[in-house]
Each structure stands twice: as C-alpha cells, then as structure tokens.
Image (cartoon, rainbow, N blue to C red; front, side, top):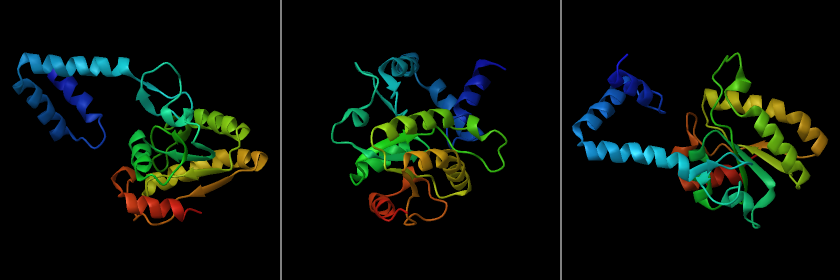
Length: 203
C-alpha cells in the first residue's frame, strides 16, 4: 500500500467519511501547494501539543496547568449531576444550550448491536471510576444522553447495567433524556430547543 492509499484509509477512519470522500480529500491535498500541505501537517502536530483530555470527564480541552477542564474546575458546576454522552461533540452541543449545569463524561464511542466485547468500545472502567469519585462528592443523578438510534439505545442499556450496582450503594438515580428527540437523532445535530426539552423532561 503506497502513501496515497494509506492516506485514504486514514481519512476513511473519520466519522461519516466513506471511500469516495476520503479519496477526494487526498486529491484536494495534492492540488494544494507544498506550503499549504505543510501548514496542515503542522497543525495536526500542534493539535496534540495544545489539547489534552480532562482527567475526570475525558473531554478534550486546551492544555493548561491543571488536569481538569473548565467545567470540572468551575465552582458553579453542579456536582450532583453527571451527564454521560458518546462524543465530545455531544457534550459541546448540550453545553451550548445553557440549560445544563452539571458535569459530563464522554464515553468515546457507542456499542454496536450484538457486539461481543462492549467494554472495549467505550471507556467503561473509566466511567465507573468517575462515578465512584462523583458519588463521594455528592452525586445524585446520572443522565444517560445517548443518540436515539439502535447503537445509542444499546449503549444506554449497557451503561445502565454497569452503573446500577453503584446506584444502589451510593443512592443516586439513573435517568435518560426525555423523548423530545426524534428516533434516529444524533445529539450533536439536535437544536437547542429540542435538547432543552429533552433535558427538562428526562426520566
């Protein structure tokens, strides 16, 4: 496999990108001058240096002195609430609504139907650790905010299953978003009003 084909495969790994789009991306790069390609390559390298993951919620944030993101360190953040999402973009979308004041946890993916090793698809162990820590800090509710599609529902069921033992011992409840969201909806593409309704009518 040559460099051209390897780069196509790298782009194919991006969410929602098929082989034709990946090939177009590579041709687009080839049609740029060498300075433009170098600029893109440098930005990718700089991204790794400038961003890191929060030690608690696993969201990416601009590298700073601490190990926690701005939400986890904010004194106004409601530590009684923990909202579990699939992707960073889901957390970004919900944060922008302004109706949620608690902490987040990013699973890093979803679990396909009939997957034989679901724990490897998401940050299951890290979530359990985060919930244990949150329980010591006054956690009262874990909100499962998955996409309203088969994979999202399967992920929701699995996460609920692994958290239920802790919910019983630490006395917090597990809720899901209200069905203001249409079936097949991915959170990051939902509008603010719909997400606000789903948050307010969770159960």
